[in-house]
Length: 361
Image 1 (cartoon, rainbow, N blue to C red):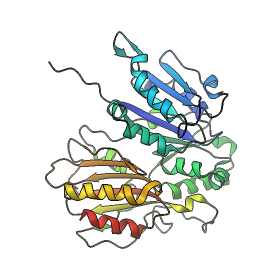
Image 2: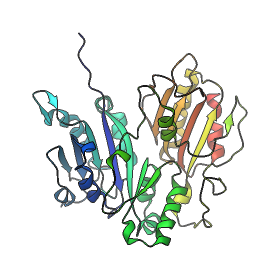
Image 3: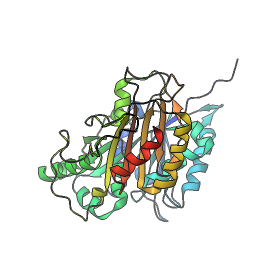
């Protein structure tokens, strides 16, 4: 019989700016049955680390501390070595002792380089899969933090879940303001208000795409299709340059006039639907073009594509200039076989994306 291949280990990236309550959240999460057999990697910034001393591992969890720098810079090599080693370090009699991984970043971390690590190292990409990005945002100080720190903006923009913490300490106006601000910044991420880190772990797991039998609800959640219908792009007839994240959208809250000092006014989500199947050679060319032209301004790309000659949908996932190798779902989630693409960008006008998408048609 062929050897049994373990499924990839799901990875939750827990991020959020300094003081947003990540460690309190972790201490609550690891005591829930859903988080049994979880390995936690905690990154701390500076020579003296304290967060790992505040985190209390349980009999069902383990913890590794990376305290030689920020995960998005000096400690990335440590992260690679740790991810390669922990499978055998936390094994007994040849059996892995954890089924899930949580990486808590320092509050100063840009999530993108960490995602690069998960996507580009061949051994890591085989052993792990990104399950989701969970970002904690302080309800009291979150607005000021978003104004002052671009890292905080990127943390919120890339999130699959947004946890609004310290809600009991914020007034109703402040809470409404941060919810509106986050909704304008990241239309796809569900917002959850929490107090003292108390949240059901089931709401923060299984956020990634299931490569088994596809379910329409999961695909729509992953793509963020609670937004209004994206403009269709049939052949070379591109739809109008309509930004689905604009305040005029019927599902978006009304927002005050933009403050030019807010970094998040530069970040937008753009959604497209392509009616025609995509030639695989054109797809390869397009991916190379995206890498060459967009770079760091292309914060995240998700796509479910109809490729000529394929009965199954192709999934693409990119972060800045890095693309994960395309994968396939077992089946289409429903009868709609149109290709769907979601871009989260910084300072890239929608018209530029439309021009680049011509290469796919």
